[in-house]
Each structure stands twice: as C-alpha cells, then as structure tokens.
Length: 119
Figure (tube, rainbow, N blue to C red):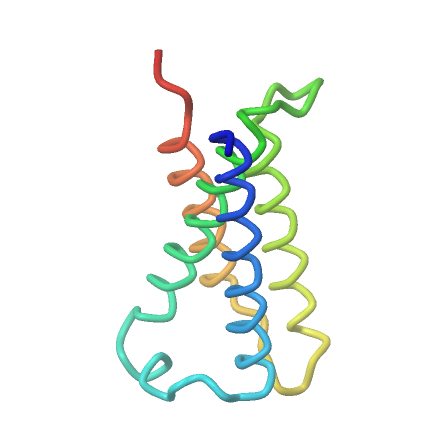
C-alpha cells in the first residue's frame, strides 16, 4: 500500500470519528465534564481539527490551491470547520462560539504546518 493511500485511509477513519463526535454533540450525548473542565472544550477543538488538518495535508500529498498556493487539505478542513461552527447558530441544541472557531482554525494552521514536507 502506498504512503498516500495509507494517509487517505487514516483520514477516512478520522472523519468517521469526527462525525460520531459531532453527532453526539448535537444529541447532547457528550460527557458534561467536557463543558465543566476549564478550557478542555477549546483544547479538544484545537487537537481534533488539527489532527484532521495534519491527516488531510498528508492524504493530499501536499497538493495546493492553485492561485493561493495554500495546502488543499488544511484549507478544506478549515472551511468545513468554519461552516460547521457557523451552522450551530441555526440549531437550538447548539450554540455558536467564536472561541471554538478560533481553536479550530488555530489547530488547522498549526497541525497543517507540522504536516508540511521536509526537505
């Protein structure tokens, strides 16, 4: 199995995991300790979306958005995270949180940078 294919399989599994976590959040099925432990929610946003960014950059073999020269994987993860966080304002069981969005995007940037190819 090629390295890129392995990264793509890892990303697919990770997306399923994120989908399960998101579904539990919408169903209010996540442990209350996530909300009551100071900053745990923000740390999880940073790490979970950062992990997706890392895997996406590796899975896309560092492909670039043509005009911007930005890595495609992290850009897609960042856009998806922004859309998902903003849609929470439209759902009664969820709330939009600018801090969560900031943690998401910071994780995407940091982990996307960590996944960069090294020469």
